[in-house]
Length: 186
Ligand SMILES: [Zn+2]
Ligand SMILES: [Zn+2]
Image 1 (spheres, protein in one colour):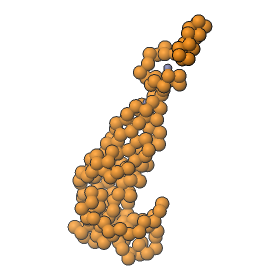
Image 2 (image 1 turned 90 degrees about the horizontal axis):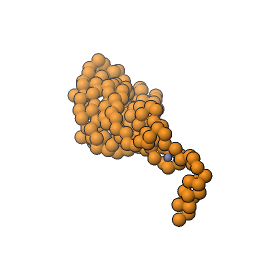
Image 3 (image 1 turned 180 degrees about the horizontal axis):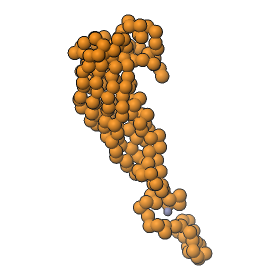
Image 4 (image 1 turned 90 degrees about the vertical axis):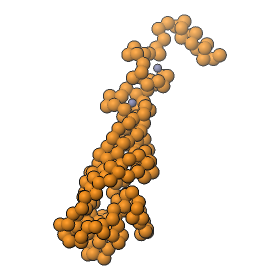
């Protein structure tokens, strides 16, 4: 992971949580339920959440001694392409998120790396990296339209699932083979 310089978070960004309403007293808790548009590139090469699709956040923010623990679920639609037959795949995913965000200047802030423990920026939490990690982990690197997708015919490239079971390119007769050769050469 690359270190990113601190950026100013916009409290109105869909994936930024504002903790001002959450007392900084261990045990204090606030629920966050909202629907937000998905950021771009949320997913992998072959499958992901389309940019702008609705993500449903169902989270709780809890004060702990060194920061805020965010936990709950994020759900949304995914679209992709079958790795075998290239058919479109549509599905939904629900991923769990659990992430600690340390207060600025807390002991945790000063003794851990930002890659290990997230940071609050003032009162704000940037949830996007955690959501991104959870979604990417939940998605298959090689998505399939169905578990037993037979893929494409190696000869003609059509999806085998759409072809009759006896689909074949074997030449039964030498004369036909000669004919089809002629056709190709035309
Ligand atoms: Zn398929
Ligand atoms: Zn074929």
